[in-house]
Length: 117
Image (cartoon, rainbow, N blue to C red; front, side, top):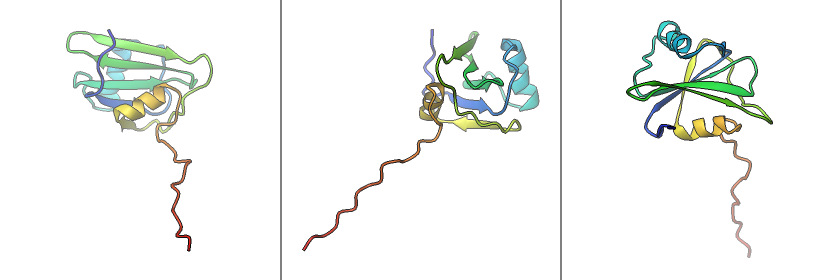
């Protein structure tokens, strides 16, 4: 039942969202506050005040899917600017929902070979 999201438009609603909202409440939030279409092959991800859980809303051409995930250990690194929706690619979304930072930080620097004479 999990949709293939590799070609979907993926958005995170930054800031806090009331996660008590269901499908209708989240769809109204997207259409009225952000002026976006919920039927446009888009996945919208919402986070509440606690960063250890999120909800996602997706229209699969016949019904809405409301996905919910709660981390037992750890939390997400969630942008808190409430006034924006941020677009993600599939890889960034995968990192976010697995508890990693959206942007990969390079910790390994490439080795620059030195000429030894």
